[in-house]
Length: 245
Image 1 (spheres, one colour):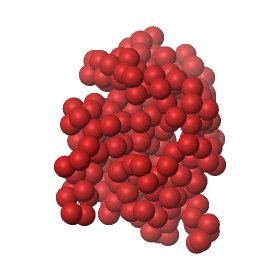
Image 2 (cartoon, rainbow, N blue to C red):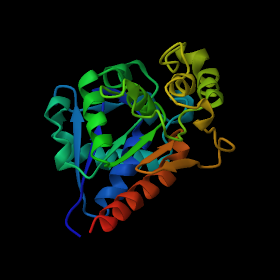
Image 3 (tube, one colour):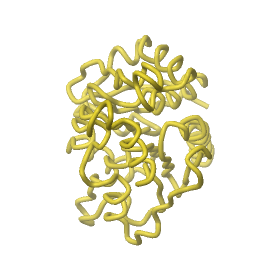
Image 4 (tube, rainbow, N blue to C red):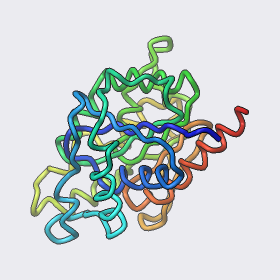
């Protein structure tokens, strides 16, 4: 199998360290090439509060997420991102869309150039993975041929309303509305673009990792899902490549 190539787009600031670094680690452990992309090619930085632990940074990355992030942030590929506009979808086997709650995420969640690239990933039937707020990139990626989101006919999960409200409830005493990225809950916005709102699945208990796979798309909810999401993401890429031989 030739070296596979994975894209991880990020905002300049405030993305979740676990949700980005677990996929990076699982890919690089297989000696795959990973390319990061930011809006203007600037080196990204995660939400710093998530590196401080559960007291100074509620919802902080655990030990594995912290270790993975430090290694990822020091890697040559992370230090040399490309611009969103320079993404050539033909060059990649898959894309993983990370999440995060803090305000800096809006640069990435609202970027129309990135959304256009994601539409092309779907048209080429590449593997697409998304976790937490990353689902808003997909929900907002509208196929101009149909006028509908690329998620229209998929079964998906994302950050659930219960999880989003719990994150806000745990942090408002310190951070106010920092972790309510938008007034509309992620789950509600995603449901609105689906052909059938029942195709949004909440999964099980918060602490029970959950992913949902539908054809070329794999989705998950929040950082505790990240290890399972990353493992299944790389397996999907391998299966896709093998089936294309």
